[in-house]
Image (tube, rainbow over the protein chains, first blue to last red):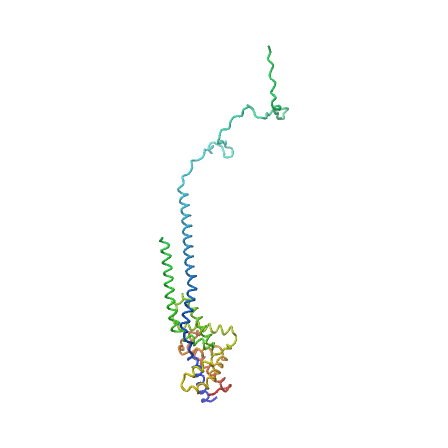
Length: 148
Length: 191
């Protein structure tokens, strides 16, 4: 390839590349571009506003939860304690917790009979229980006969 | 209005105001660079509709990444790089040259406007064939040659787009023209 051919090819290449540098877009490219950008901006603008609203709501909910917890803690600190319960045996008296006398809340009435329902008696070294004789309802116990 | 509502209103106002400013910036970028970006896209796609779509996609990406606008030093290089990546990615996906090549149509349109239209029209097909030979060049040489064809870009800006040095761009262009000349010689394309 001689110098003349090289020069000729360079001119051809420049002319072909010049074609690319002179290409023009169809009329109204900028207007179409603006319209598409505006449409896209509208689409993305709404979610952005929604995200801000959601963020605000979340912030308000967090603030409300914090206020509830703080108020609850403060309220619990302000409560008056009830009077202490009845003191049982103290450690110095030698009475432990397990063996301490249990004082019922109400007085227990004494049984009508002097003994319990069952009577424990010892017989030949063995304990046996004797229950009072059963009588049919309405049968009175025999009365002692009076001596004239 | 409670204090919270007032604060929230302030935030919303600031967000909307920022949005308006960004929209204006993007619109001004579109007005200034859309033609150059169209040429960059067209040099790869050789199709008017695809080139315009690439330009629109470029500004949609700018809109999506508008937070980076403040960090951009050279808007032209930044935008060209976005367009360049878009068209190369689309071309890679299509794996082949577009079937609807508008180059001959463009060549005829441009030739009809120029003085000596008849003579130019005869050679428009030859120009289209040369540009098809450009596609056969190695990737680095082809990219450097196509980007330098866009008059709006200096060698330094082409180097910035391709993430290389100016000297590397010059040597790539030199090699590209040499290889293209050899291809022309082989094809026997002449005026």
